[in-house]
Image (cartoon, rainbow, N blue to C red; front, side, top):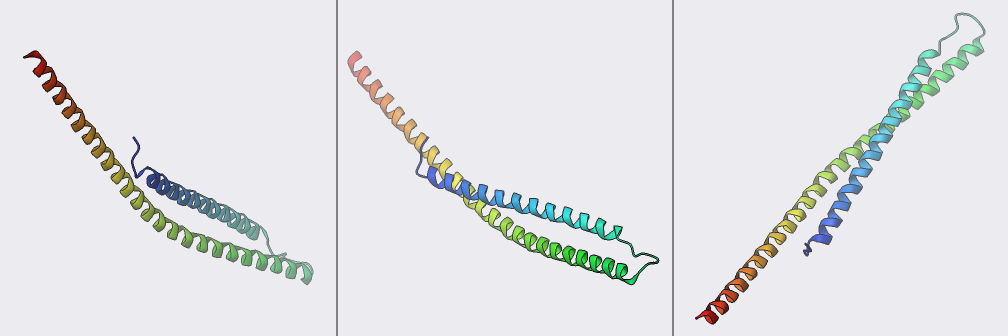
Length: 138
């Protein structure tokens, strides 16, 4: 049944869906970054300093370890940024859901009102028909 709230409800639902999709993307990105951090940590742990050999090899391994640690820190910063954005989106989702539910409630009330009006009209029409028929019988 069409009401004046249909387009508003549809619009509010689209907003909620968009925020949910963005949350899913952020969660996926966070999981990807965590996987990369795990892989970098494994690589970092696999690098061991040689017990003997030339100094250049030690410097090279130390440089690789330093690079890996910096990359891990950079990825952790990205995760922090994404988690902050996730908190913001969760708050937006909460507010959007409240607005959506309000509009759904108003739409449902409008439908009830329309159905009540139809029922009343139908009852009046039936009363009118009954009066007309009653008048013809006498």
